[in-house]
Length: 157
Image (cartoon, rainbow, N blue to C red; front, side, top):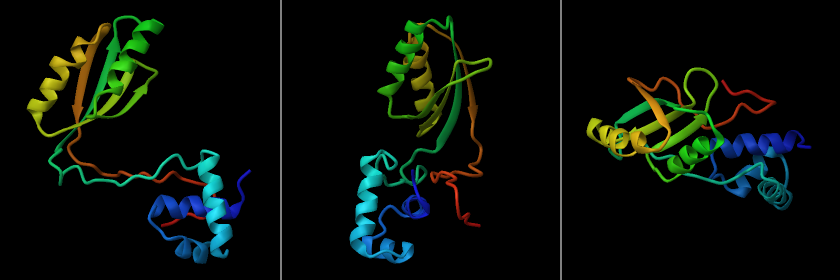
């Protein structure tokens, strides 16, 4: 079970994964050694799965964000597995969810332009065996994007 200090460590690391152990220890009110031990314990127990840098997609030329609904011809386990395995290798697929409702999968895809999207859909997605229907929706504007989970405890404004 996590205590209030563990939750605060997770909150602080979500906001800034590069925070130094000294800064972290001051923020949570512990000395550096137990602070570091708690972070290591959170990592080892899987609460912290990895550390990443968030890159600005527009600055690196990935200007088109698309949500794609994919319906399979049949929802048999082999078709689901084949689709999921195929999607894993594609770097432009940022997220993929097995869904309830009309479509089987929802993908969030980021590409440089419409031509790259066309290539992705026509030369990859539509060629996965068992794919029946593909519907795309373009994101016009990103209104909210966050990576920090809403953890219990203090809430920031």
